Image 1 (cartoon, rainbow, N blue to C red):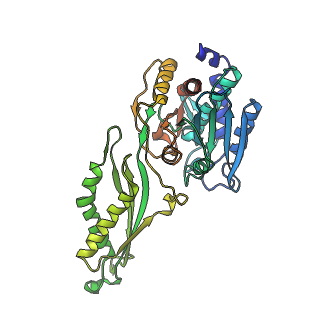
Image 2: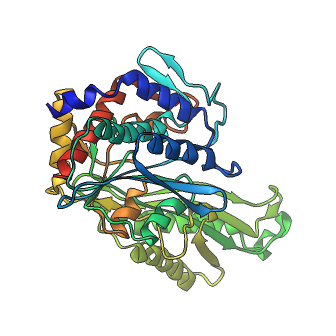
Image 3: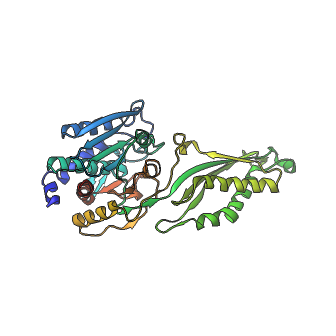
Amino acid sequence: MGMEKLKAVISEEEIIDYIAALVAIPSYSRLKNQEMEIAGYIHRTFLKEGIDSRLIEVKKGRYNIIATLKGEGGGKTLLLTGHTDTVPAYDMKDPFKLNIKGNKLYGRGVADMKGSLACMIFSMIAIKRAKVKLKGDVLFAGVIDEEEGSSGTIDLIERGIKADAAIVGEPSNLNLCVAHRGLEWFEFQFHGKTVHGGKQSEGINAILKASDFIQRCEEKLMPKIIDETHNIIGFSSMNYGTIQGGTQPSTVPGDCTLKIDRRWVPGVDYEQVVKDFEDVIAELKNEDKNFDCSFKVMKESRMKEGYIHEAMEIDLKHPILSMLRKSTETVQNKTPETTFFPAWTDGGLLSSYAKIPTIVFGPGDLKSAHSAREYLAKDQILPATLIYALVAMDVSK
């Protein structure tokens, strides 16, 4: 009966029109006042529907939107959250015009994650229009800056955000993503001595030193990383992403830069991740007096001091999982897969620093995100909206 009441007050067409409006508002990285216009648009939508909404300036010209459906008291609080920023359009054709072809909606941010935002927004609108009485509160947080420093979610945390559970609406194809890896990008600088290639015995080849480091990591560190296992995710990972050194073939390179992507499963300590690299460097320095290496977190990976890209994990017995599973079965007549999210999300911050049990669940396929063919499956839009609404009603009982 609850689903029929919700379906009577919203339509797929209305939500798609709203997604089109969100896509039409550029909010990509490095745009001046990047999320200001889209935040204002969402804020006005909530106010028009009689839902309390606030704009909070996190950085100059960049705003979070916090909306609240107040319950009558005595129930629990659900947080629905997602980011309003996107990556740039790159080589995407007509990025800010929603293009519908068959079952697919194309446009920048449609999967990552303006489609999910629209579904969350309309789940709250449906509850309001249907005059559903809640005991607990339903919160919506549209946050800035997830594609870069996650300052929007950090601001939520530092303002004391409280909820009994949170859903991050990243594209999961409406499957239950109960965990994801932590993430850090490291830059290693190898220092040698530059000389002419004809006198290479007098130089110190920084590229060779980087090669020694890589080989030692493969021998000593990689087996340990593969041993860092999680029952759903599998194991941790490390990728040598880029290496750059030297100026020309006839010169012994005095410098070399190696950039590494390191990801770890829940339960692995970040300080140990750093120490593992320190140990490899110390071992090589002890063996080779000419080995000179330093490393740091890459600028692109740095968050506000005191925060890192922590892993996310939720207790498999937490009620939000059974509620999402039940609601998905009700709406789609199928059981969602319980899996992990292959990328990092703001859920790592909410679960680690705000201590809010968090799950990733949203419409869309992550594989299309950031690509020139980013799309959202049309037949996931209304189901996602109804599922969010039914879970919100369930949590707030």
